[in-house]
Amino acid sequence: MFIYASDNVRELGGAKKWWLHKSLLSLIESLKSLGVKLIIRKGKDSSSVLKSLISEVHADSVYWNKRFDPLAKSRDENIKKELISSGINVECFDGFLLHNPNSFFTADGKPYGVFTPFWKKFQNEIVVSAPLPVPERLQGVEFDVHLERLEDLNLLPKIKWYAEMENFWSVSEQDAQKRLNWFISHALDGYGENRDRPDLDGTSLMSPYLASGLISPRQIWHSVVNSKKNGVSEGAEAFLRELAWREFSYHVLYHNPDMVNANLKKEFDAFPWRWDKTDDYVKWTKGLTGIPIIDAGMRQLWKTGWMHNRVRMIVASWLTKNLLIHWKIGEEWFWDTLVDADIANNVQGWQWTAGCGADAAPYFRIFNPVLQSKKFDPKGMYIRKWVPELAKLPDEYIHEPWNAPVYLLKMIGLELGKDYPLPMASIEETRKRALEAFEKIRRKN
Ligand code: FAD
Image (tube, rainbow, N blue to C red; front, side, top):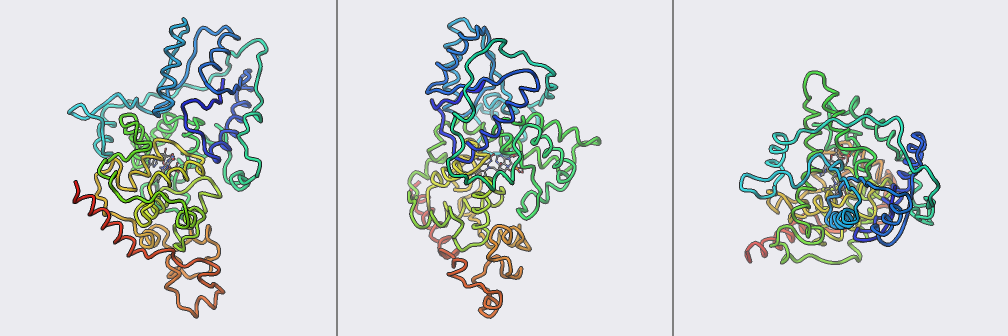
């Protein structure tokens, strides 16, 4: 059964609603091949929708995977209590993650706040059990019950802005598996070196499938471990470590539920954030900042619903540090535009980059977008793809077109300020301003 209700969970963003629509379509088909109809219901609160179906089909047991984000967690715990008190058997599983975020702590009994020791403990404590085989047949409800039509959930917007996403993604359990297999045979070995390169197809693209449950982390973990007959390769080791970042995000969120909206490091409450969605923010969302790597990332996000991790850090650092705009504003934009929008990873990614999250690194590590671009997109292939108006620039100037000589710009027919914006702000000056703002709150504490 799939319940689409709005109680106690954050409304999905536009991109994720599109993804959900496609996922449900594929789930309907997969269940059909096992002889089962997916029952879709919608309503204001999940509890009444579920209880009404339980009585219609005379169910005596209900099973679900636990959710670990604060709102869904408390909703599901309440439903569990209500059902148990009315005599229904309820069983809940940890399948969304590799570990239960409440299962291990530091030596002094506290939740982890830094990734490296968390990962060490994770490797020592967690045995990831092998996934069970897909059942050959399932028993569904044997008589007719009301089925809501998928279209009635209104997950697709009226304007077809998602056309490019349709070209980029294939959304089904089988497609997740296919992409994972491709990644393991073509990119896993080089993952350690290539994972930071947005110009290469070097990461797994598993995030939207994971976020929507089209593949489980246990399936991924075991496929990667089993792919290496003679022990886990360096690439595989680096990949499993990244997968554990997802676990860490949930661990931190589970123990700090208010971090969805509040700074994890409380001293940042006094930071002079701008809560401003005007010009600077609009340029950022549209990929018109005049800084090529940032614009490439923001346009990739808009067109595909996904952005490379390295570039997520660069664009988030620009918004929160150089522009001093509050991380929550960026987090909300990502929430609306990412097909992999995931509350724990998104909040964690934003707070980490903004400097107020679970990280031991000092605030003054501010990403320089030009240096990052030169290092991780050396030939500017990523920029050329997403910012085609810059495609004719030679490698030397693709990262900072404002330094290109006038004759060259003329030769390739590029007028800065007209065909492509000049930088919206000075990288150096805004960096200095961010450091001064940080210094003020540091002195106060
Ligand atoms: P791979 O490199 O192939 O990694 C495999 C899996 O490991 C990913 O699918 C993901 O589940 C996990 N993973 C990898 N890197 C991270 C990370 N830094 N933090 C947590 N888990 C990670 N990820 C989301 O899934 N949803 C989000 O909403 C999200 N928002 C982010 C916002 C910001 C500002 C930043 C900096 C990062 C965010 N991330 C988010 C983390 C990361 O960017 C994506 O998980 C990754 O880019 C997904 O691509 P992939 O599946 O090819 O990753």
